[in-house]
Image (cartoon, rainbow over all chains, first blue to last red; front, side, top):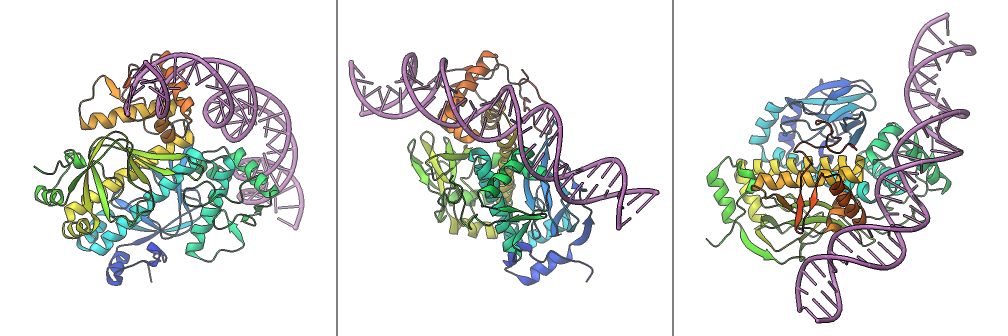
Length: 232
Length: 232
DNA sequence: CGAAACTTTGATCTCTGTCAAGATTAGTGG
DNA sequence: CCACTAATCTTGACAGAGATCAAAGTTTCG
């Protein structure tokens, strides 16, 4: 098979297998090395990407050289909504990554003719918007400790939805990436990690963290769930 | 005409007028008084709403009684993506509002049969996601002054896209609402407004603000545009 | 007119950003 | 395999922006 398509696309919720195949046939496999840029903000979306393997950070660079990471894409995610006119963020590879490239023209054709593929796109957009809104909660309201804890939990949960995760949750991104994602400084991320470690909530390993004391539902201050684990 | 449909829906970018009429025929006009709740988070979306007149705040309540306002909806906006399974935020009226209510079932029928209505939904979702991501920048990176200034400018610009705005930009929402939107405390919003006033950047009036010194492009630190007006 | 809600200003304290230095890890070439 | 350099991570000291607590001023509305 020439094309290593993203195996977990849409989390298995594919309504129509034959149309999914058509989508798959439009994909061209491409590869990027760690740290390389896949596309830059504001460029026209002649092509769009789906992620097959690895992690991609989607971010907006700021005028002063800093950047804000909007989300980390995992296998099965599109890098942005495929039908948008322009990328409104930049994307680069956290480690080595494998992607599927689509021509937007081809994709629009398929979407126009297949309502189930269209539905897939809408579902993806709705999910992305929901994630962005959840993130808004965190950035607007949470303390550094809440932010870091929430990040670890939701990262673990996202990984778990793809595979069974090992005890040591891998954290392939840099501390600076986590800081840029959470609206903190990297020193604060470090300090907070050791603080959580001293509370026996986590253990920091060489390639990731062990979530020893952060429960599945330790969503902190969030609307639906009760606060746990984070109370001093 | 029984139904006062939102006149500015989709900002006039309607591809197919006859299908737009069909959409319009599905709408039932409804009215809510100032401060009343239109729907609550997590409820199933049997019906969805488009805003005809007034302002609606979309927010997530937090466990500790606070809330995070995700966005203020203006005439022409849907209150959330119409095709989502559940509302993932609450909505209530900032002043008295007029809405169009749609049954989701009807809407899905129309969307399935009309690709131009479908395209409208996708465009709306893309726009909402873009706004949420821009907001993430602000909450993660900006100082109180940057946040308040950016809020005033983008509010003015959104209003200007609907109508010509008067000199005194109306601010129908409470200070607490602005604070909840910007991730600040209401005291900080007050202080920042008077600070901007002392800089002659704005003038605070009884029902709104005059943007005397905040340029059209004073987007602060954002990626594309250069910093202005806010530099001390 | 009076009470309730909202807004503004003040004083103080805390968390996190900033600056700085040291520790650990990764990468490179001999 | 080791030495050496660069990158990343961790910890410390300090200062400042904004949160918190408190009170006075203003608007709204019955």
